[in-house]
Amino acid sequence: MTRAQDSFTFTVGKLDAGMAILLGDRAHLIEFPSVLLPPGATTGSIVNIAVHQNVAQERKRDHEFWSLQEDILEAFGNHSPENPQLEVRNVTQTSVTLEWPPIKLATAKLRSLDIYKNGQRLASIPNALSNYSTKLSGLSVDTQYSFQLLLRTSAGTYPSNLIRVRTHTIADTSGISVCFGNVADSVLLENAKLALKEMRAKWSDKIQIDTTHFVCTTPAVTPAGAQPAGGVAAAPGAEYQRALQLSIPVVQPQWILACHSEKKMVPISGYYLGVTPPTSSGYSQRPQSMSQASLPSSSASHKNLASRQSLPAIRRSTPPSATPQRPINEEEDEVEQPPPPKSLSEMKHKSSGTMDRNFKFPTSPTQAQEVPPVPSIPTRVPAPKPEPEAANRTNEDDMTPVAVVVPSSVEVPPPPPVEKEIRKSFVESEDGEEEVGETVEIDLR
Picture 1 (cartoon, rainbow, N blue to C red):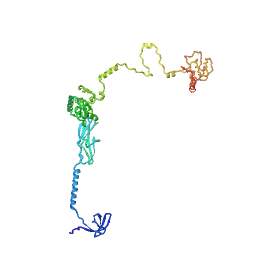
Picture 2 (cartoon, helix red, strand yellow):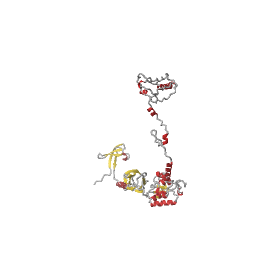
Picture 3 (tube, one colour):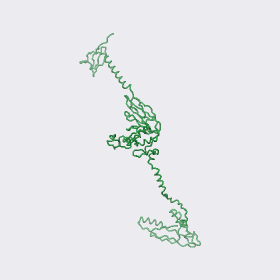
Picture 4 (cartoon, helix red, strand yellow):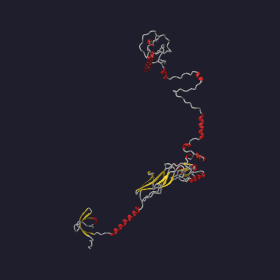
């Protein structure tokens, strides 16, 4: 077996742009970096090039490569994010408090953590890396719900276990979670705690996420807790202020005793801080709502009813069109009552339109001609021209009896246009500032 050559001989043919063209014995042509040539080599120089394999460096390189692969597998390949474990912390009539241990993401990055109710996405959990509980309110009484967490990471999606919860009924008081504030009466405080224990409810001295009520008799802190309130013992306590910020109802300890006595949830309207709570004998007659709690007592209502009945009856005026009904009285029948006044429309409707034959229209300053007198009725008069029907009628009450009078033989001249002239003169007085005489109302009945 022939041994490979240790070196090869080449002739430098050309140097250009940092590359050298080397020519071999058998017309082999290779490009070789000019920086690797011996110093002083130029075109036409002959050089020997030897190539050897470095096995030790290859083994070292392979060892380093596989060590790195094992480190990557150990760091990123053997551990993955874990599914959240959802648990129930507290249940009331209208809310459910859920909690879970800190989520483990391994080397993945958090995308989101969502809560699902009955298979529908409800909300996203804020600060999922440091927040491990949530409270869901606005639920219906005595209704079953299902809840689940869904963890989304850069390594994939990981759902939690499915929890089915049924909200409490009104008779179930085990969901009460109380935070006690300053209760001046120590006996009342101990009785309230014993009642909570018998109802399987919870209580603490700090407001938590599942706290349902804050119980105290005064908002002032105790001497031991005066530091959070600025060192003033009479100032409102820190827990009391936090309860107001979180909209937690502040009630008195009598509310707990009422729930224990009634064995069901009692409305808190009569037990707010500052309201005089009902006595122990009145728990069965507690108000059911805020509107009923504000109603007056029954005795006061009876007094108001009696005072209203003692007042005289209110008279109601009858409409002008209706005729009032009067009781029959013999004395009133003997005295003739004047007729009621007639309206203007009835007077105009019932007027006959006739006038007295001896009537004369008054003269006015603006009237140039005098009204001719009405001539006496002759026995025989030629047939007059046809006149309006209103002028041919006569009033039987105002006429003197005549032996024989034919209506067609009576000639009555038409009355002068007094009304038109008066209106005309009135218009002229407005335009030309002329004086108008006194007008007289004429009754044509």
